[in-house]
Amino acid sequence: ERFSVPEILFRPELVGLRGRAGLPAAVAQAAAACPPEMRAAMYRNVLLVGGCVRLPGLGRRLAAELRAEMPALYDLRVAVIGDGDGEDP
Image (cartoon, rainbow, N blue to C red; front, side, top):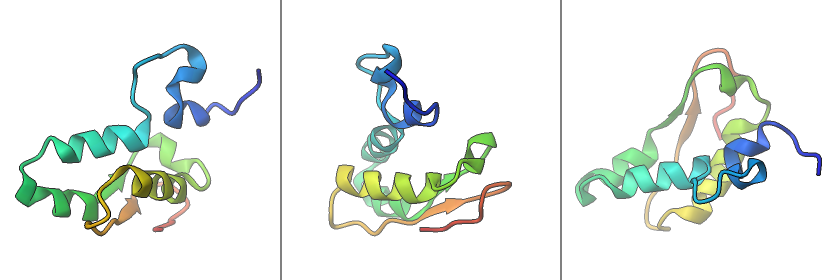
C-alpha cells in the first residue's frame, strides 16, 4: 500500500507502530496529563515548530483532528512557528 510519509505522523500504525499515538492523540494525552486548571491554556497554545512544519496543511489538519480528540468545552489554537507556511488554523 502506498501512503504519504507525513501520514505517519497521524497514523503510525501504517508502518507497524501499533499502540503508538498519532500527533493529535499525543497532544490530547499531554493536555489530559496536566492539572485540570491548566488544560484550557494547553489547548489554546499548541505550537508546531521544527522541520515538519514545512508540510503544507499540517497545522490545519492537526487542528481538525485534535478537535475530534479533545473535550468540546475547550478552545483550540494551533500556531505554526518558524519556517512553515505561516498557517494558523
